[in-house]
Amino acid sequence: MLSLIAAASAFAVAAALSGTAGAAEPSPSEGSQRYVVTGPKTAAQRSQVASTGAAIDAVRGGAVEVSAIPSEVRAIKRFGFTVRRAPAEPAPGPSASAASYHTFAEMQQEVDSVTAAYPQITRKFVVGKSYEGRDIIGIKISDNVGTDENEPEVLVIANIHARERLTAEQALDYLGQLTKGYGTDSTVTNLVNNREIYLMPMVNPDGQVYDMTSDTQPGRSWRKNRQPNPTSTGTDLNRNFAYKWGCCNGSSTSGASETYRGTGPESATETKVIANFVRSRKVNGKQQLKMFLDIHSYSELVLWPFGFTYNDTVPGALDADQEAAHRKIGQEMAAINGFRPEQSSDLYITDGTTDDWTWGDQRIFSYTFELGGNSFYPPPSAIEREIARSRGALLKLTDYADCPYRAIGKQDQYCAA
Ligand code: 0X9
Ligand code: CA
Ligand code: CA
Ligand code: CA
Ligand code: ZN
Image 1: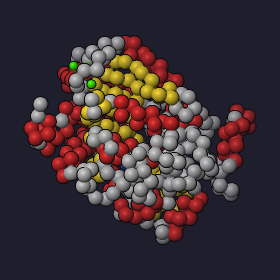
Image 2: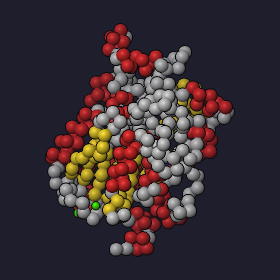
Image 3: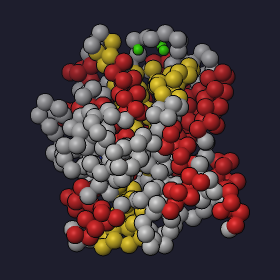
Image 4: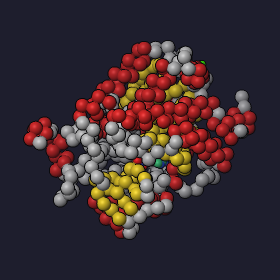
């Protein structure tokens, strides 16, 4: 105990002390704490919880796990739900966790070594800088990787929420699949030859580093970026995108909230970097990206737009064929990884999310995965098992980029050359 205290940085101590007065545990994330909420059973009731600004971390076994600040806890109780503190995350042990999850530096080393080993089909690039000046790393994977060919493009991003540590591992595993399988696995070889795949394994590096730089294992439970806001720190990047931003009680105006939406759409540095990259993939006015995936954890879901409304279709924004194709591909991917396929708002209402923007504004077929693992910090022994589940689903998503309407048999109508 003494050595732990001695080892703790002044900053960590300050962060711990700023937690709720009288709380049993020091705050893992400057004011917000983890709770289990019982009572909400329907999407509308979960949306009530989300409307308080609390982040719904998982929906499991009839209970809703949240990260919430005190004012949000009071608001959840006013809706008539029961709130109790969540049990502490089990500590995996410092050596095991350090050896198993990639730090930001280790992710960069991994990307450097893979791109060095496969120079014909991989290229590393810096998408842009984070708020604190770290590189947001991208990897392009394709044959003739140095040439912008006329091939359907795919974008996969991970770790937009800092603590969702399994997601970067899934992204790096996808990079591994695509490179190791090239020339040996015919499915992989065809995808690398006929797609241009863009991968960003850690789009929130400041949050990721902050979350991992912790004296208390397994991490600080940090979700947002690290940009100062008017009252606290961090913007929820998955509430900061510029489609229906702040429209629908699916994000918070409070700086301390885990779902703080920012001062305006794309006010967060990392949101702007991601969105600028997506916009840059328009060639002669035509968006080249056909499929988008944002990897989260840990509710075991395959989600598609929209999140801002319960309606399945939206006039002028999501028609019946577009909805049917999203649904069909989502169901096919879910059949592979065993997750539950549903529209995003079947979970709860959100606004300003990545996927609502990539579809609503850019018309890229868009998905969010919530990986498994039962925690933001599954024990290292669970990593391989959990990411193995979604390997095939990622390849399926990549494959459909040629014509998502193929899923509903309407390729001739929508994708004829
Ligand atoms: O609330 C979120 O941002 C996601 N859940 S998490 O526990 N990973 O934070 C779910 C977002 C679902 N909505 C959309 N994808 N639109
Ligand atoms: Ca190519
Ligand atoms: Ca291209
Ligand atoms: Ca090719
Ligand atoms: Zn998330």
